[in-house]
Every structure is written in C-alpha cells, then in structure tokens.
Length: 173
Image (cartoon, rainbow, N blue to C red; front, side, top):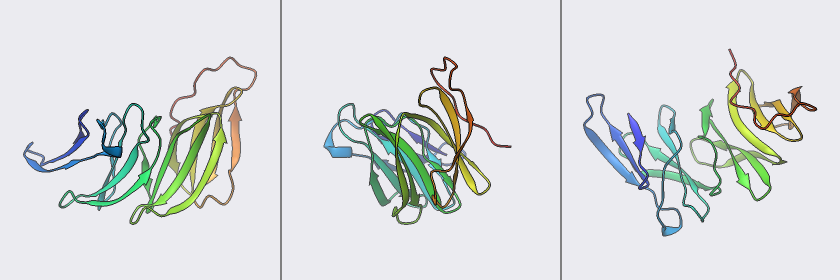
C-alpha cells in the first residue's frame, strides 16, 4: 500500500499496515505536498509533489526500498495523477495558459513524446493502443492519441456549441 501526505512524504505499508519505508519529496526545497493519487507499476511508485508557488516534480520511487529512481519537472498546477501502462508514464499539467501532455519511459524518465495544447486537459485514460484525453477547449472534447505519440490524434467527440464547463475522466471498456 502506498500513500502520500500533505507534508510531502510517501509511505509504503504492508497489507497489515506496517510501515516498510518512507520517502520525503522536496520540490525546490519548500513545503511540498502530495494531494493526487499515487500510481504504480511492477517496479516503481509514481508520485506528484507540488508546492503552492513552485513547479512540482514527478518522482519515480523504487517499490522495494523507497529510493528515488528519477524525477521529471512539472508544474504547480498538476491536476491529476500520472497514468502508467506498457512501460510508459502519461501525464498532463498546466504550463501557463497551455496544458502539456507527456509520455515518459517508466524505467528512466526519458521523454518519449510531448504535446503543448491550448485549453484544459481534464484527464488521461489508457485504452488498447491509444490514450484518451478529455478536456475543454471551446467546448468539451475527447481525443484519441496513439500510444507512440506519432500524431496528436483525432477528436472522437466534441461538445462544441454546448455550454460545457468541464469533461471528466473518460472510461474505456
């Protein structure tokens, strides 16, 4: 079990609730907090730590011993947890008036691809050979992006002309 605290600490707990390790985040050295869900794959725990006024960091932490494997810079306006699948970590965060969508190699944090997008990305969901991104840009949308990031993909539905303030997480079944 992995949990984060508003003090910027990640705890690994056994199924019986015993602390196995803890990892202290420290983005830019000032009052970190973890207020988004934690993601994981078979080797690593992925956690976003932000401050109220500084850029946040995505940490990849080894599950076995709680040591840092790598970090990736982000934004203080990180709105949702990273999504992990197929050796890739997908994330999105606010970058001034744009949203940035990135795909990172989960083992080493290298950027596989990225898009800077006008508008607001609500969430990212995995589905087969694509990711599905929901958001708001002159109305709501759901967009399908190939996992390899070869294109920004296609808009599969649009809510333009409808007064939509927000589109929530898509679900793919």
